[in-house]
Amino acid sequence: MRDIHHLIDGRLVAGASGRASPVFNPATGERTGAVSLASAAEVDAAVASAQAAFEEWGSASMARRTTLMFAFRNLVVDNAAEIARRLTAEHGKVRADAMGEVARAVDNIEFACGLAEHLKGGHNETASTGIDVYTVRRPLGVVAGITPFNFPAMVPMWMVPNAVACGNTFVLKPSERDPSAPLFMAELFQEAGFPPGVLSVVNGDKAAVDRLLEHPDVKAASFVGSTPVARYVYATGTSHGKRVQALGGAKNHMVVLPDADIDLAADSAVSAAYGSAGERCMAISVVAAVGDVADPLVEAIKLRMEKLVIGDGAEAASDMGPLITREHRDRVAGYVGSAAEQGATVVVDGREARFDGDGFFLGVSLLDHVTVDMDAYRDEIFGPVLSVVRCDTYGEAVQLIADNPWGNGAAIFTRDGGAARQFQEDADAGMVGINVPIPVPVGYHSFGGWKDSLFGDTTMYGPEGIRFYTRPKAITSRWPDPATSKVNLGFPTNE
Image: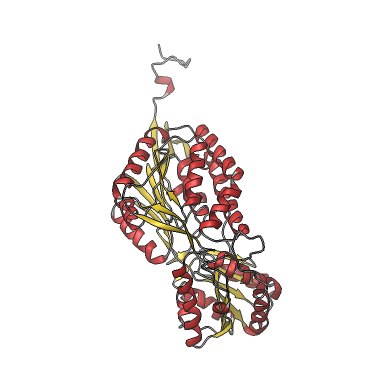
């Protein structure tokens, strides 16, 4: 078993709190390590290091920031396979999903490499006679990130590159369930040449989170996780005078109209519902099947599910790996049982799948004739369970999305351009896909939902990330008329 430490002031530091949390390989159920859980004093040490580093880093030239960010980007690319291996070993996702996660992380690092362009201020010359007005964006200081288990490499890169490129220093609190990948990336950050303290990693639980949210030197906090915790982080952080962006849960709907390409819709539903074992906030949880498309669509999805290979994510043949913990697996399985009890049709029952060993595996499930009062519809399951709600009309499907408390993503599958255009207006969600099931924006846009999927007014990464990690300073200046200046500039005088 490995001991997994903190990274503070550029060095790996053993935990001193006396508390640790087990880390497992979900494919085998084997305990592979123990991660230190930081005390308030250890969080304070990381923040103190970040505060000291900010004194120099906050005024570092854009050229230097960009050079180091490019070096970090190259190290991440060169070590992509190792990062993916660590993701699979502690999260369980298959290699393709793990490599895809690293690729999306790189996408965000590359955006930060061009921050000089996005940090350019605005300038109005001669706003009034002899007066210029211009605006610059300045860093906040020490900022913090609290990231989830499902994308331990990608989500920190939604935060760290932009924050650091803007001149801030960063304290990261990753999930204690799979901490090795983000810690390794932080080590690459040091290898790239960033000064000690610009990025620190403190592993921990609620005690570490609370201290970051309360610490007077932490100016802003970014969070991704469940809605109840997002609400708590937002309320706690803002009550202590911090900027907070907190992304919560989701119940993403995929509307399939009668004219849709059934093969495309079925392929998309399977990949979007069961990829990464459904443990992603942009997973499709509900298919809203409109009209007579329901029967052929359900059959097409079922046929594709039968071909999925579920196994160790390290095995090349695996299409889906295990869930993150034994307890979460059992919780997800419980929704299949409750759906059957509440009247849904269990087309495919993932509980019937059998696996060797003690891994946290669960088969994929497909529920039909689901209604909005069922637990499987009302709750965020966060696992490989897809519900089909049958709708008579497009309007009924759109109303499902509007009535849902979450508003992360929504998608429509249709051949009708008019219907697609109408849906992008009607869908009550922050990210919309048209014949795209998981509409995660590229790194030069921004990620975030509506309603209970987002607390705060700023979404993640891209242009909104820059706005979150900087504050504007407007400067109004006036200088003497050159004709009356005491410095001889060659202008004619009355003498």
